[in-house]
Image (cartoon, rainbow, N blue to C red; front, side, top):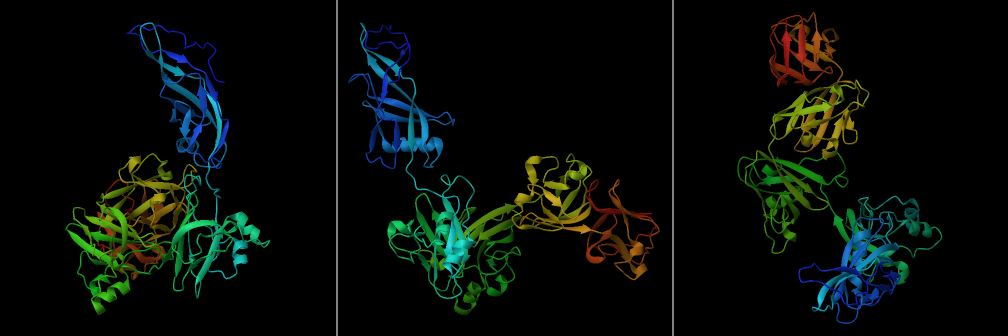
Length: 585
C-alpha cells in the first residue's frame, strides 16, 4: 500500500472557498501487480493498482513512470479501475530504457483530479500518491551483437562457420536501437549461391553437429528476395537462402528486431559516364565524361563522382559502357539511370527500364553554382547533388605553429575545387606533427579534417584520427586537396633544385640544391649559376613538381625564368603572400 504519512481522509468534508486553488491531497494506492513479463502478457489491458476512491469520484488516473537510472519519464493513462493499455505500458518502458529484453525497475506515481463534497458543493481536488516500484521486462527477440555468414561463396559450410570470416556490418549502436545488420559478399563461382547466417553461438554449435541455431527463411521459398526470418529449430527445416546463378555480389540486410530480411544482387561496373551535361548525348561524347573513383575495389568503395560545370542550366543522365553502347547500336536509352519519384538534392535512382512506365527522369541543375558534385552509390543506388562555390584559399593550422595561427595556405588552382601548394609541417612541441585545414583562417567552424576525406588520403600524409598527420616527418610537403572529390594527396619535398640552360636542364643537379630556412619559411641557395637563357625550380630531382613563370607569382609548370643573380630565395608556403614567389640577387 502507498500513502503519505500525513494522509488526510479526503472522504471527510473539505472546505474550499470559491477563490481558493484546487487542493492537492494524498490518496491510498494498492498495487495489484509487482512485475510484468510482456512475453507472457496476452490481454490488451493490465490492472496496475486500485485506490480508495469510490465510483464516480474520478474518470481516470495519470500514471507517471520514471527510473532511478534514467532521466527520462513517460506518462500514460489509467481508467477509473487502474487499468492501462498493455501496448501503452510497453511503449513507455521502451521509451525510458530502450528495447532490450532486460528486467527494469520503474517508479510509478499515480495522480488524479477527484470530485470531493463540501458544504458549499462539490469541488475538484488533485490527489497524488507516493511512488511505488514495478518491475517490467519487454517482449522483444534476442539480438546478438554480431552475425556471420555461413555458406555463400564457401562450399564448405562447416569451415565458413568455424572461420567466421564474413561478418555482417553494424553501426555499433545499441542493437535494440539499431537492429539493422548488413553484409555484401561474393556469389559462388558457379551455379546457385546457398547460404544461411547466425550468431557466434550458432557457428560454434555447428562444430558439434548442431545446425539448428542458424537463421532461415520462413515459408521455405529459398529464392525469395524478402521475407521473415526464424531459427531453423522453430521451423523444423533448413530453409536456407538461395540466389540463382549469374550474380556477382550479393547484399543481405536483416532487421533482427522485426525478424525480416532483404536480398539484392549487386552488379557494379568498373566505370560510369555522364551523358549530356556540358556535352551532347552521344556515346562518343559521354565516353569523354568518366566519373572519378578511388583505387579500391568497386564493391569495397561503390561511390563514383563527377564534377559538373555550372554557370548554365544542365540536363544529364549516366550509365556504364554497356548502357552507352545500347544507345548507339539499338537506340535504347532505357539502360541509363534516372532519379526515382522526384529529383531532390539527394535520393534514390534506378535504371529507366526498371521504373514504372519507363520514364526518363533525367537529372537537372539550374546552373546557379560554379560547379556541382554529382555522387552516386552503386551499392545503395543513392545519389547526391552538391553545389560547389570555392573560396580562393584554404588555410593550414597545426603543430607547426602550435595550433595558434592559420597562415600557410593552399590556393584554388582549378575552379572545380582543386587546391595546391606547399606547407611546412613540423612538430616543435612534440604534439605529433598533425594538422587540419580551415576555409576561413581562424574559424574552427570551417575546418576540413581527415574524417571528411571520403575520396581518400594518399601519399606522404595519413589519417591521424580527426587530424591529418605528416607521415614522412618534418619538412615541406606539396599538397593537392580536391574539395570536390574530398581527397588529399601530399608529396614530401626531399630536395629543391635549380635547373636550366646553365646546367643542361639537369633536374637532379646536386650542385644546385637549395637549403630550407625554417625561420624564414624559404629555400635558399648562394652561388647560383642561373643565366638569362632560362631556368626553373624543380623538386625531388624530377619534373613532376616544378615552378616557373613570374618571380613574383610562380606557378606549377610556369614558363622559364630569366632573372639573374647568385643568391636566390624561394618562398613556397604563401605564409605572408597570396603568391608563391622568389627573390634573385
